[in-house]
Amino acid sequence: MAITSKLLGDRGRKQAAKLGLQPGRIPPGQYLTERFPVLTYGRNPAYDLDSWSLSIHGEVEEPYTLRWDELMALEQTTITTDIHCVTRWSKLDTTWTGVRVRDVLERARVTPSGAFVMAHCDGGYTTNVPLEALLDDDVLLAHQYGGKPLEHDHGAPLRLLVPKRYFWKSAKFLRELEVMSEDREGFWELNGYHNGADPWTEQRHWF
Ligand SMILES: Nc1nc2c(c(=O)[nH]1)N[C@H]1C(S)=C(S)[C@@H](COP(=O)(O)O)O[C@H]1N2
Ligand SMILES: [Mo]
Image 1 (cartoon, rainbow, N blue to C red):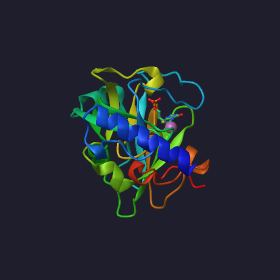
Image 2 (image 1 turned 90 degrees about the vertical axis):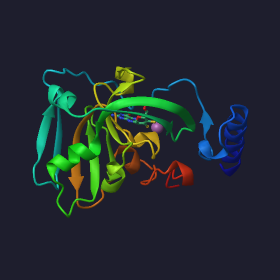
Image 3 (image 1 turned 60 degrees about the vertical axis):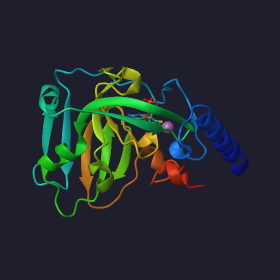
């Protein structure tokens, strides 16, 4: 395991050198891909934008739901960022458009007890993130990738984007943000993935 990780780390470093990237650009144990791999547990859930909604609830004073048109009417942000999957691919300079999660959470007025968030998706996938991590500028409810509507495989109509964590925290087919007072584990976290998911310290698995 350690040897594999070291080799892939060298691969990433070599790639970075060849491309003239700064050495710290690729996290340890990752290699670059130009492709955009698809990783979905189960099938893509069907959706209908007319009946679609996103619900914000839990440890908040004002739980609410947003219809698609309401979400689109909120301030939109475009960011370019690197993404890192625990299966060891990283992709640089990916461009996403959507609404800042911070804005959506602010409107719900999180109570002082709120400290973690569970993302719930169509199809049953879940993942948990500390509330604080969702307040960053680069955390989006993303509905466009590379200037085009998200492909279904990549989470249409809406996905969470948390670039600073391994990509399994970036929940596709997002339908609910549940603010929690205590941490609970989501789908992959319950199945052996590390709760933290920091690519720079390789928080990959518990074992
Ligand atoms: N709803 C849902 N979201 C999900 C997943 C999933 O299976 N279902 N897989 C996660 C994992 S493990 C990864 S690496 C990324 C993959 O995103 P991509 O398919 O757009 O590359 O989505 C994450 N979000
Ligand atoms: Mo993943």
